[in-house]
Image 1: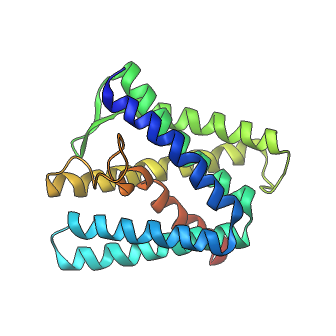
Image 2: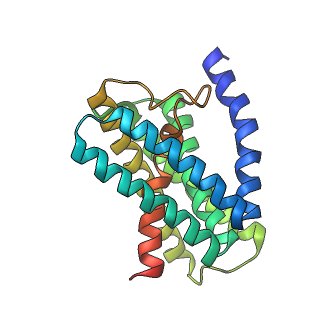
Image 3: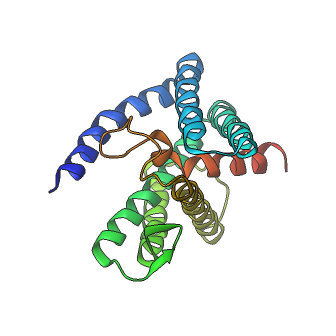
Length: 210
């Protein structure tokens, strides 16, 4: 096990419980947590982008994304919010694991590390995690049959992976490996939530607007 992977595992063991603490607590603590994450993300974005228009659009998008996180958690409930986050996290894990194990053809020049096997791994892990989570909590907050549920999970996983590619594109444009160094072994905060910040606004629009 190389040093980078060790750092990734150790920081994850610290960050995951802290993150879940604030998510579960909700209310003012969750707002403080989201505000801190939003400010860090904006700082990383502003450092990464050169064009003023892109900077402004990115900041507005991040505000929308974190507002979406608050709204979904507060008005759609803890279990649904955790379901969304779980799908994004396991999409990322599946992509990493399958990409390392099977490698294969590269997905895009935007992100040299992304492979087709990683895409399949992300989709597979999201499906497994999603169905196991719903079975475990035994709460039917998603009144969908299995086929529609499968479709929803796949769409969320794909959006998460597209978000990953978009942030990778901007990192490539800026000629940087990571958006920051706040998370040992992971890089910047945007490196870890790149998929989530694209999923949340779309879920918010579907629930509260459409």
